[in-house]
Length: 209
Length: 209
DNA sequence: TAGATTGTTAATCGATTAACAATC
DNA sequence: TAGATTGTTAATCGATTAACAATC
Image 1 (cartoon, rainbow over the protein chains, first blue to last red):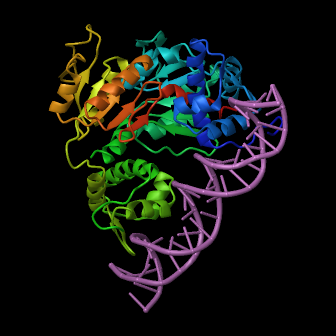
Image 2: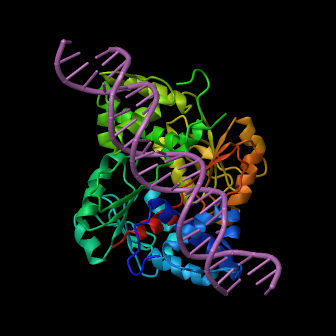
Image 3: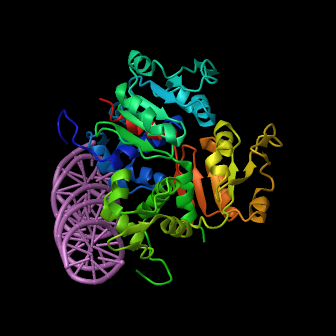
């Protein structure tokens, strides 16, 4: 394991860390103190060697012969994912989905809470949603910078998604979660994750019969 | 390319097919008649060889020197994904997210439309959502079988997700899209796709600064 | 001590990309 | 014909899994 600077870690590894974290938090709620990679692997359907290797990218968190101390590993994964600080999120699009996301309690009480909601539709501007007021897009960049927001959610119709992404990049956002059914073009410094219900269902359809 | 039976194709390939389909439909709306793997690759940020190889698993759909005929390729991908028939979807969970999904117009007018909504909460049962009536869970298996439903969406809180998945499997559902933050245990014949906003955002947080 | 389990190297597996003959 | 592009094989790349010394 490298000292100081973390090595370049693949996206696959980073995507598994939240899964580990969620599982460990469930263990903590049940007051389980220690867990082995074997137990984790069984419950999460992931190879135990995979889990050990993933964690070892970031440090030596376990004890040979014993396993991992649950509270300690939670703390470490939270540090790695930067969940030990507040990371306000900007949401663009106050439609059905945007409102559902804003009201999602698991998000509301987390470090990744939605801190500002935007929509370009004048009928939406001013609406109260989950304790926030929907803002227009005029001062988007200023508002995002003021609040130190680095993560954005795109929840607008597909034809508007690229324009919204452009403004997010302009505002200094470096991580985008895109719910619109569209491929976004962004600079290589910006990370985009896609979530599209239609595509997911279509992929599932392949396996029917 | 094998005749008749399709070869075993990796999940990665199947997940790209909806991306291709969506892109091709956009081209069709613009009345573009022909497209090369190079053009597709540029717009979708996918290696052209990858695209050709993916498609070649299922047949010879292109013409050397020319490219792919857009309407023909759309038809073929729809057949591969079984979108040339109606595949009704069962939704369990009529909370914020469930309602947002039910109202999602792109889903409503597709072959993968939500055909039945269930919730165990007596206060939700009987509600009208997107032209459907929320049903209780008592006759879940019967209703699902009656309507020939093979695909299900889990939109309930995490602690209830596994129980819902079990009943879906019991009802003959073979594809599950799970929005609950929980790993589901299902028989190997059942395909599960995960969609968890929190995990996605947490993975994005890793890349901040 | 004996048993268990990590961290890590080596082996394997699978997916992506390059290259090119075939051919429109 | 000359240029373009597919379908496919071979090469490369990267991720997963197995194995095991170190050690609690």
